[in-house]
Length: 106
Image (cartoon, rainbow, N blue to C red; front, side, top):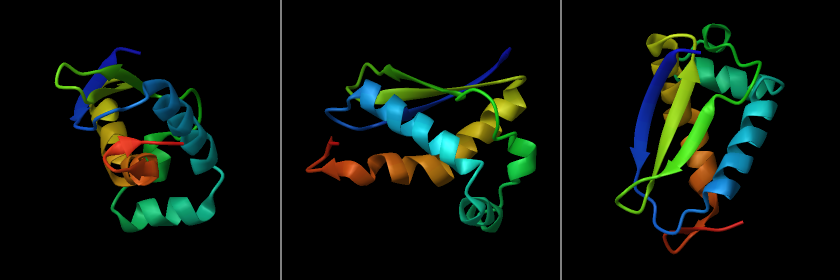
């Protein structure tokens, strides 16, 4: 996969292994959840175009400011940007829903 796009997230005390595990779980469930697919359509995303099957497309790395970077991998840069849109719209609020006092918790 040659396409890449990245996004920086400001979040103190982020456990990247936990974020990656939760993200992978969301990815697995997403293609099976008809309500989630309907939600994506209402948010203006096309689930069929996003190709929600296959390997988890997101990689998480620590950022220099204490937050983390999300890197989306896809066949091309346009598809990677579309995956980042999906991350912003669907994944981010679910991943950060476990935050307590500005720190991610399980």
